[in-house]
Amino acid sequence: MGLREIKKERARRAILEAARNMFFNNGFDGTTIEEIAEKAEVAVGTVYNYFDSKSALILAITADDTSTVLGEKFHIRESFTGLESVKLYISTFMGNLSIYPKRLLRELMREGWRSDTSLSKGLISQDLTLLDGLATILRELTEKQKLKSGTDIEHASLAIYGVITTTIMWYAADEERTSEQMLESLEKMLEIIFIGLNPEGRDK
View 1: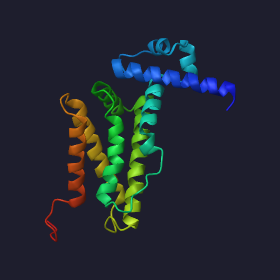
View 2: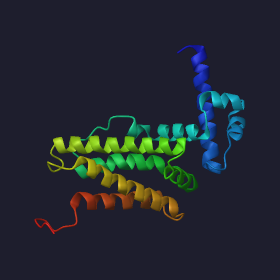
View 3: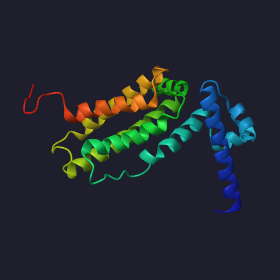
View 4: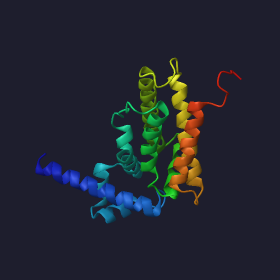
């Protein structure tokens, strides 16, 4: 990497760190590009050279924070059960999200429900990546005979995704709820999905 590229990457990282600081302290709504530029000690135009909006900035931050789960292949440990494997994958993802202030999580969830903004589309895209990752893991677990054969991968992934979103919503809405309680609830819900509600050997 040449000197020019090093300087550009350094400026980009400075802008992202400034944006993270501002978003975490003031929320998404309470932060402006001008404030981010001032914090990063760059011109406003320099920020726009790298990121065309606040939405692009927060999406870059969330992508960085979840890259260990969403951007890399998850390795299933041979000694783990299917439930333990999925727990590890999701707890890593949730652990990264737990550093976010609840106010910021609520703002991002609000944007995620909208369909007319670049931020909502970007958040949906990241969610789809998470779903793809879940499907890949479930498929591999099935091949390794750690899940029952014939598992409906698509709907199993959606069910687990529903558990994740419910847990995050509950956590973000309750100021008293801790990240430890969030993960405990998540694990209990996953156990219900994997173990089931019906008595063994009965259809109903």
